[in-house]
Image (tube, rainbow, N blue to C red; front, side):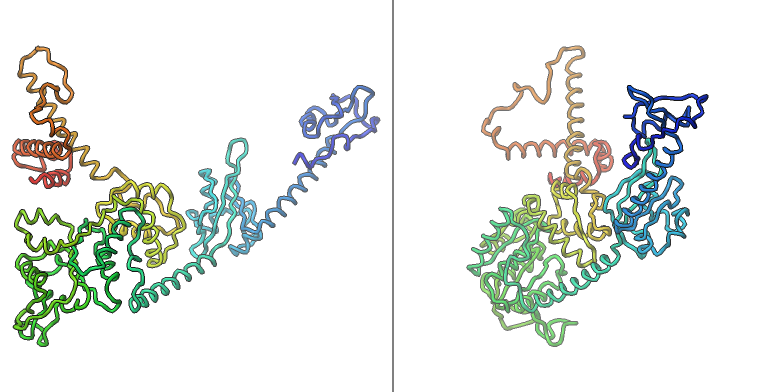
Length: 571
């Protein structure tokens, strides 16, 4: 306002004879600003103006007040014109939470006239919990381009800031831009995009994807190496064994091997060996003739091997195949022939077989759970799929792929995935691999309703120390604590008061160096450490009377952690 006030000398009066000379007076130089002069009128209604020479005249308080009133009216005109020109719905509420200003833009957006709302409590027109300006007034919160919904039928982007005077909040200003139309158009676009995606999927089923690796996402070195191996494998029809943890997408790699070699019309038949009851497995794999058993289809049924003729038979979770079926599968691999259930005519197996498992087949062979001869028949060529923790550079690409898939599926618009969310995704070890990541992204998409993925939407396993790290820390701490107590007891029994040599882990002289070559072998060291840990756990379990719950509580770890550790140690 001070910039709109006139110069002091423009208000100078020279009619000195009308002044009351009995009143106290104050003399100021002509260079004084009007703002500085205003506070001097508390003792007199006029001020004398004098420099080095004679008295120049005086300034009357009535003239100053008139100038300030004119400046105030100018500011008000500028202020109102500026707000109306801004083009947004702008609201000003005072410290009593009443509407002090309401622009024409706000009238259009909210369909409430100025005369009806100015001077009235804002909460009389909007739900208080939806009114950002009230939150800003009470908390001092400043927001910028935040998606806001003041009414159920209205969406807006809002900027809000508190009005402060002398360190106190005396009001709040909110500027809102109506985006209801844009939101509805976007929802319709998502709906139409979803329909297009469904149509694309239908077309894709009729016209398979030309790129065999299209569904395998990632560009990490280990994935590129897998793709190169697949290209080499696909030049032959040899049997392939795919190894990898659960959730790594072994079927996608099997399909890529198939697509690289076979024609588009060649069948790809997948069968999950762990999902079929043992009693039905043989008929599912080999098929059966009519009348083969009671309840059978009178017309008979083709088996998966016959359905895969000219293409690929994918045996997922091969480790779950019953032992009695393993013998018959071995015959198929060796002789390329088989008998249907109840049949007398031998059929030819004219398909490539790809098997996959997440189990250690060599360990199963040692436990007589898997046939060794079948293993070597299947393992002509093997392909090892790396777990997600070994290809974390692919997490970003996988996340974007899954976000696009689920945002279309659930009609969600994802605008932003903050860096802190990606940081947690990269820190996690993903024991469930790509399948677990896909489930987490689906969860994030479902919970994200305002366009921004938030850290609290992540599962607890990602937002806290991983369970594996907790297990290692807690179990190691518990064992070391017991080990330290046992050592102290041995020291005490050696003689009370005797001076003992300080010890941290072990004295070098006490180490068994009969075979120095073992000290440089990390494998041998880990085996000895596991053996010692197993013996120690057995000892403590006996002391706890065989009660695992008591032992877990005594060690300060969960029962699940104890069970997992004992399982790893073969206990």
